[in-house]
Length: 202
Image 1: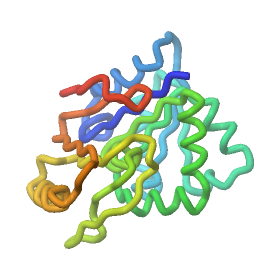
Image 2: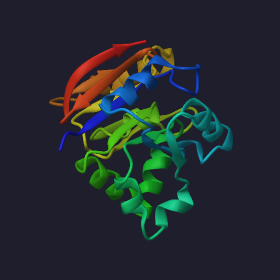
Image 3: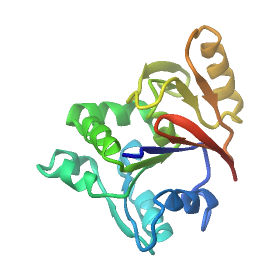
Image 4: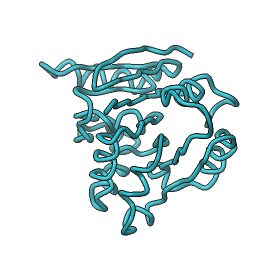
């Protein structure tokens, strides 16, 4: 079963109309007709405006979204396995991962990935697939925490942001034997079967 992850640093439907990276994502599925794609807005605390933008951007597809309450439904694994694409939004990465682990949604996503569901996400939704995350603890501090571990190493999105770049560079200087990725807001990575196959600049 082919496995795909698209890590989006910046841009996408939340920032622009008919974003190239979103069109690229739909093509990964390699089939015609409307795709079943669900938005996961956990990192933004299920912000309604963000959800509305998703529906507008993908209105030609079969769209849905999953809120934090939905994670505890009895048929959540079946629902996610039936999708073509899961699209994870940006926001607070650490809080998102804590919620996923508490509700078991992290396992749901891992199972769906093994079943060929395409995983994609922007910012927090790009960082979360890696073994290790390094991101904001609060407005003044950054810290290291565990990601989902589907991909080796660690990813820093928004590397063009001066404060984030300096914090990541200071942290990464002490990391050994770990693959590190840093992406500016117009840079994106496509992994197939856990191997990087494309770097997309938009």
